Image 1 (tube, one colour):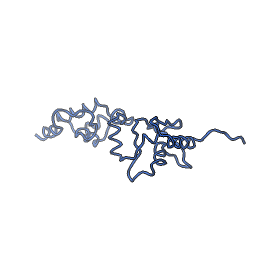
Image 2 (cartoon, helix red, strand yellow):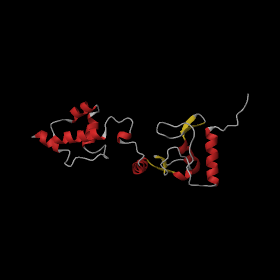
Image 3 (cartoon, helix red, strand yellow):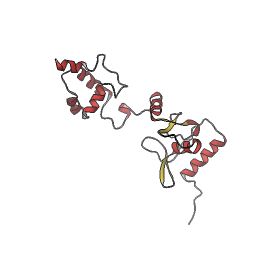
Image 4 (cartoon, one colour):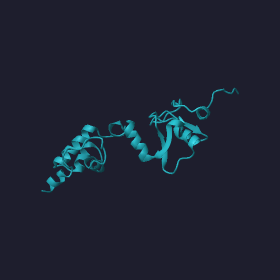
Length: 175
């Protein structure tokens, strides 16, 4: 049986991390292997599949504090450079994603059933009155709870709210 001189993905990552530790630099270390749907590198560590950036941060900074995740300062999901990674809460990570423009909210979310235009229409029509959240939900193919979050500004907050309060529609319907 012939053995290959080729390194496994884990061996290549370990070698790159070791080299970085000996001579830290500001360049991204880009993973060349498998990538998850979210754009993050993935490799095997024994029998387990692990995210490469999380693995690199654990190797260099230790295990994450409870409730923390790996955050990128370079905005590059393929990067596993220890100098670009830190542990942070989900709230901090989400705030960074929004600030950096890498958040997959709204229409950038591949699972979204709504668009910015449909959110505007839902808010405008509900605020004007004469239509229930359930009716709008059925029309736009979402749950009533989704419409509730939309009209109350709890979701799709990046899309401007109408100039008037959302409860005007309820007040008109009660008259």
